[in-house]
Length: 323
Image (tube, rainbow, N blue to C red):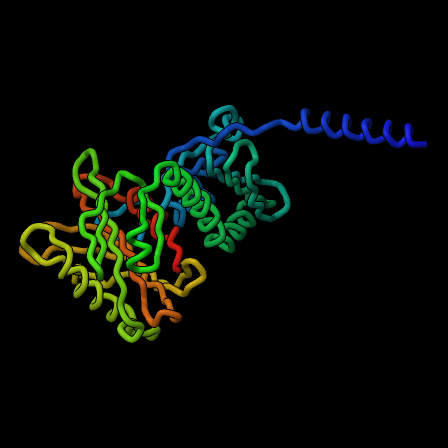
């Protein structure tokens, strides 16, 4: 009996190993940041279905000085989606003549990867599914891209011990950034861009009562950032401030389990010169310490596209841990 049990055990092990060996391993995904492969017939792409997809996937990014699309879209015919193209990190497939529905799948042909399939009996059904799931689609693709950027950043992290000891916050940013200012009430980190300009991160804190959760929060946050950043950031001879022509975008979000205000807008310099750029500001509510911890990223790169650099700053700021 004992010999029989041993034989059965080893047979099970052999079967298990055989299954493991036969399971194909996925190769690493490919693709430029924020670039979606859309697998769809040409006629559908040039018609109402394509118009519906472009309306939100290629919508202008909030807060940039000039218009740039949320995603870059590459239309791919169904029979061409294979080989390296099928390993794109994010893709969306449209299937006509099938039951209506949406499927969001991970690691279909590569790893990491997010693939979304939208199906419908006819074009009207497909458009209905798309419209009902716009936010869900954008969120799934954006989360995949944020994770990709954060993974790249973790390969060469800057030490942030002083940031943690001063503000009780830790964020992950690469060694390409240098500390421009380290004071007890304000930190400023900067990365120079090869084609000119720079990317910046600032960290500071203010008492809770300076930013209340009410309908006037956007004005309060603008007043705080113009006061603190305007005093501490030097770009030319003028004063760093929130650009006055357009009101910033304000959203509610969460970072490290804390409520946070997310504000996107444009900064400029109050000295008559044409210095302007986008910023992303998170005011994170830390009730335990009776404060808002404020994290901001901003860019000065007038001759360059800014979407993907701002996306990198968003990935850095969203890595924050509050201690």
